[in-house]
Image (cartoon, rainbow, N blue to C red):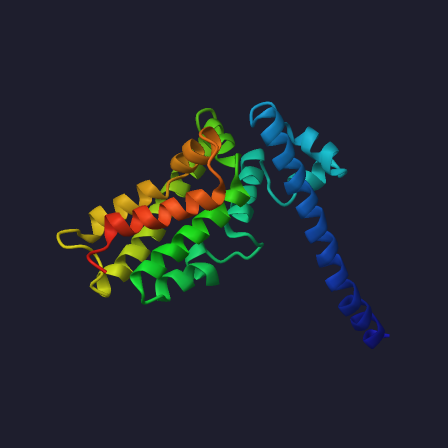
Length: 217
């Protein structure tokens, strides 16, 4: 009997995890659709639950609050997967830091920027708007800024260690330059407002980053 119960639990556990993951994905996708269509203030958890086809309790359970749901959605779109690891531990970011050729390093960073911003898209506007009216969302936006700056510093640090930064440029100023060039506001201006293609943005970011950060190559 005990062996049978253990076998049943072993069989059911992966199935339950798959069901939970599918439900979580449905809630996140429903929230994204409503946030983009109606805005953060007008979107209720009741509406998200209805759109996802789940109960209100089920919609709340993984995220606790609407701001928690927004944060989980940001995290998913930024990283491109459900891993809990921070950006710096993802392979696509490690590829940039470990690359020894400075031009290729900044090209990879531009590639990652395009990929992440394409996934996130208009969610930038949603989060910034939510930050103006919701304390938790304001904290999220500040965290996004801080983490983003720290990640760009990691890249500039690696350039500095390899002696690739142009003469007279320190790590702090170099980080500010890369952070500014790679900032979501620039993407929104060039791609969102001026209609640049994501590929054109990637090319511009790579070329401009090299021009601003690197010495003679």
